[in-house]
Length: 415
Ligand code: NAI
Image (cartoon, rainbow, N blue to C red; front, side):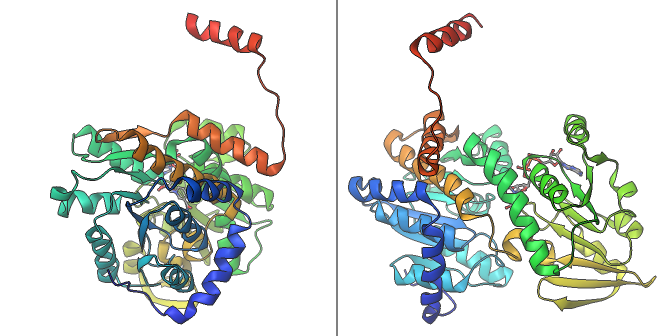
């Protein structure tokens, strides 16, 4: 199939970006060497529908090194980096992706990825899985399986599995310990602030930041805001998470009470319209809103546009909505995942963990050929990724003695 990309002459800059991350992804380096030798994906087609930046590109090349024919499409129009995609195409990967494409182009690219007829795939958020089930259901029988990257995608897969509508074996990579402990918490925490600071170039210390949602990602965003010197308010709907936030040292209150206090608002809930008209009405002049949840539905931007007399792009990734009472509210990255749309996403060392889980889970699908359904990442893969990481860091840990293992085992047998 013929690739659709912006410009192949951008490839040299893409190679530089890929080589930079490759030097910081020891887990993928180790697996790449193994895959080159063992060729686990020989004769298989692998589709990848993820944020197309350098770390994803390196993972695509690792899968290709394992013998696969690889095709990619972006999982978000603003996170695709045209130079990286050009380098991938130069390496023989098929790509359907252009930065800032229209919604029509975005859906056309994902459709083309489905027509590649993959044996295996990696999805982020569930759009590709949904498309396969809606429009290509007749072709799912031959499919070996797929892996899902994020919380929102897992929620969608769980709903499909409950209704017996899931027709392919899927691995819930997000739910592995080596994923959400690190990617969601430390990756999102660091990269969200990196993106906000890049986009705004404003000080964080001394400001009041409102973090909406105290799940795995929200914990990271709140922790890093505190580290940067912000006063942090958390809003939640889950009473247990609310208490956790309080015990972690944050103020907890309903959003309408936090709205007049906040300088920066960050949504990380996986939910819809968590910042809505009632909150916009209370916000200070020049309040900044952004989203780090998977879809651009967490901030009700239609309501904001409706309330505004004018909306103007005042800086790359910053839109100013001018309200009738003279206040301005700033929205970053059109309410899309701020860390990917206004930044380069998670640090390479974090994505090394996640992508290590992804490629080993794909390999396990080939080896085990499970029936359609939703599966956890095997604990052995979770541990293997942790072991390779420790090795790469040169960190030794204690090991259970036989006696200790037997002792612990006797307790679990008695449970
Ligand atoms: P999670 O399920 O651990 O946490 C979500 C939290 O939001 C829950 O505690 C829930 O009670 C809370 N919540 C739901 N509705 C709310 C409301 N109206 N007000 C306040 N709190 C509310 O999920 P996780 O892993 O933190 O993921 C959150 C979102 O971020 C998902 O869409 C996920 O796909 C996405 N994600 C984004 C990443 C990024 O790079 N920006 C990385 C990983 C995940």
